[in-house]
Amino acid sequence: MRVASYNIRKARGLDQKYAPERIIEVLNGLDADVIALQEADLRLGDRPAALPRDLIEAETDFKVVDVATNDVSLGFHGNAVLARPEMGKPRATKVALTGFEPRGAVRVDFPERSVSVMAVHLGLLRSNRRVQLSEIRAACDDGSHTVIAGDFNEWRKTTGLEPLSEAFKVHAPGQSFHARRPVAALDRIALSRDLGLRDAGVEQGALASRASDHLPIWADVRAKRHMRPQRFPT
Image 1: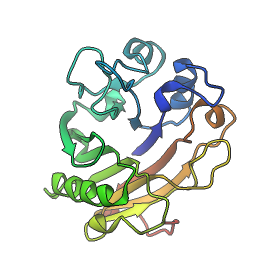
Image 2: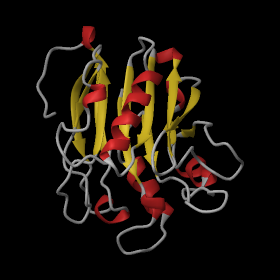
Image 3: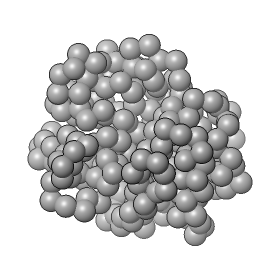
Image 4: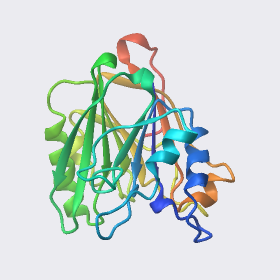
């Protein structure tokens, strides 16, 4: 299964143009089964979707997982999840997170594939992020094969990620921020210890390099009993 994560910056590119069609083209090029999106909704008012639902349905093979709490948003606290129909019927759970700024996460279970994907966008303060990761860890504490994907907002390689260390392995596929000149691996994917990483990377094409201030990341994951041991950057 390929899982991707992309902070789309409300579909506003580095040229400051609102261009959801550009985001769609990047998403279609990731060849992912599940995509966790951050900043998928506008910030003010009822938080209408920055990436229109009808555009997703018309121009991609993805289905929007139903996580919004109103009729205009795509996600929960800006976190949205897209999944291919082959993933089966998803079940979504919203997780409110503690912090100075309003934050949330979304857990999506895919029973037919025996895997869960948690889409996250952590806070700007490390103290808040540690608490949020503890809350996310608790929301995953049921023995499921679990992937946590999103914008971790953590500039250091390991500091601040301690709440996940016992049950998850956190992977940084590469430097994903800033898209114009990537210097930090803010976007990461964490795998429960029963999952292994087969391959991972950052989409650095010309379109992705101007569609948002983050580059999308992706990871191919599989249950460890079905794969040979391999080494990848952490």
